[in-house]
Amino acid sequence: MQYPTALAADLLIKRGWMLATAESCTGGMMAAACTDLSGSSQWFERGFVTYSNAAKTEMLGVDPALIAQYGAVSEQVAGAMAAGALTHSLAQVAVAVTGIAGPSGATPDKVVGTVCFGFASGSQPITTEVCHFVGDRAQVRQAAVHHGLSRLLEILG
View 1 (cartoon, rainbow, N blue to C red):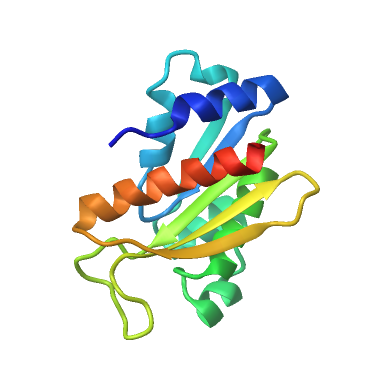
View 2 (view 1 turned 90 degrees about the horizontal axis):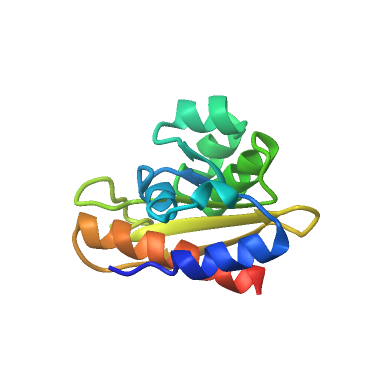
């Protein structure tokens, strides 16, 4: 799958901004897509792979009560992950992703393919969204990376 990484890089460089990612279900794939580009150190600051709930709390400062109340796969946690990525980095914009890539892990309320995103940028309000992707584990993860980077393009405008 072709990701819109080069376009995001151009927009980040034009703004003089750095990007941080906070990833759960994608396991660092978004950061890898960014660093696949030569020269990415000009615009990619760091990536957090916070697969466990403890990692979300320890590395990003996500409140454990938030995870307990809404679940790790929730817009609330995705937003907190994005905010934490900004707080714990030198970046000006952050993208966070948490979801159920499958084939296990689903609940009656959260089916396989449910992925939540959080986007944080400076003084702008944190935005979140939930998407439902179809396919096997690899396809869900790839779709999540593509969506996160595509939404980043919209935010950078």
